Length: 239
Image (cartoon, rainbow, N blue to C red; front, top):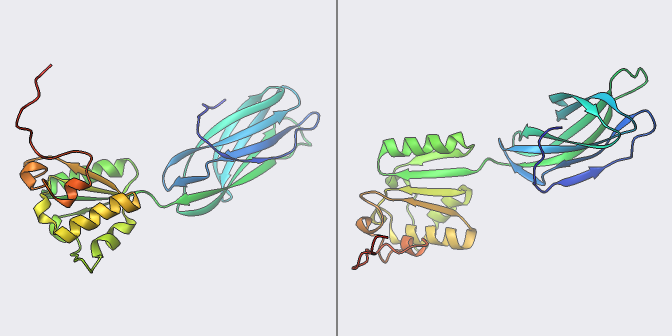
């Protein structure tokens, strides 16, 4: 059998196998996945007797995997790794075919899979080489990446929520060695609102121009962070 996982799934169930046959009795897929994400389709196959079989998996009618199996009498569980297709709703089908049985036919069961867009990250960096390196790293993990210089961020005012609108389609905002002073007070405030009210992910990376050297002390960006940027007067003693 394929390796099992501990993920939660939605389940579609069917009938048990009749004598001399095998049947797909359930197929489980996650309730939602991200585009490009690896997930598992969990197939339950009921067999009336020990037998060789082929398990076939298709997404939207296109074959994606095939496995030769040795079924044992009773329930058999198989976890099939798949890659989530493009955003939208898709049909995952699992079929089992018993070998050597001229009267057998594929026993098929299907489940609907909902795919969301790939997670998006916007990397803002003062140095091009840092932005490029971080962008490549996030791309390797399946993120849709956009890299910007601080000056490319939308301008915002107290009345114009341009920064907040810009962040609506962003899952993670990375400020890589970016001084707080390069963002206006309105931009910072809208980033803070995005984190606190919308659950946006903010990652601030240090350097010569970030945190205390970058003017974070007392800023709206500092309020959005789970740390203080003020350098303590008394350095902690080393262990």
